[in-house]
Length: 257
Image 1: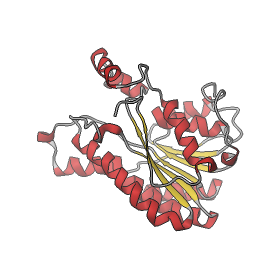
Image 2 (image 1 turned 180 degrees about the vertical axis):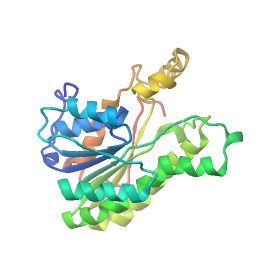
Image 3 (image 1 turned 120 degrees about the horizontal axis):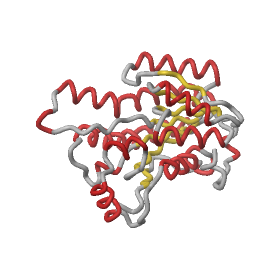
Image 4 (image 1 turned 45 degrees about the vertical axis):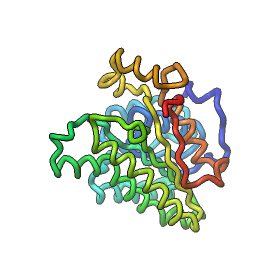
C-alpha cells in the first residue's frame, strides 16, 4: 500500500463495490491496490491465479480484502456468472473498470478472420457485456461509474498491432454512446487512454533501450510513466468528486499526443 499513502483519499469510495477486469497484474493490479486502500470492496477478474494470490497477500491490512474470481472474459456466460457471484457476495457493483486487454503484436498480412474475432473478444467485446451486466444493479443503487480503458495507440497511430488499435478506438465510441444511454440512470461512463506505461509485461516484452529512447523523445515529461499514474486518475473518475463528468476521454501519456 506504500504507493497510495501520500495521495488523495476519497470518502465516497469507502465501502463501494468496485469491479476491475484484468486486475491481477500491471495497471489492473495497481487499481486493485489503490481502491483497496480507499476502503472499497474490490473484486477483480483474471486468469492468472498466482499473480492474484500475491496481490491479495500484498493487500493485507486493507479494510476489505480483495475478492478474486478466475474468469475467461472471452466467455460471456462465465463473465455474467462471475458478476452475479460478486453481486451475491459483495452487493451490486458501484464502479466498473473495464481494464483487461492484450497488446500482442501481429502483422496485417497474417491476420485471419478467426484471429481478428479473437482480438475483438479479448480487447473490446467483454467491455460491453460487463457493462450490460452491471447496469441493472447500478440503476437500483441510484447510479454508478464505469471507466473503460482505451489507449493512445489509435491516436498516434501505432503500427504492428492493427486489430488491437481498432479495438481501442472502438472503446472510445462505445464510451460516448453508453454515456448518453445510461445518463438518465445517473450512470457515468468515461474513458482513460494510457500511453507508454511501464508495467512488468511491457518491460519484459517491448521496452528495449531503443524503444524507451523513442518514448522519452515523444513525451513532454521526461520520466517513465507507471501503473499508479493511471490508477490515481481512475480513482478520481470513480469517486463522487467527478460526479458531473461523463462521456469524456482522459489521456495519461506524459504529453505524447
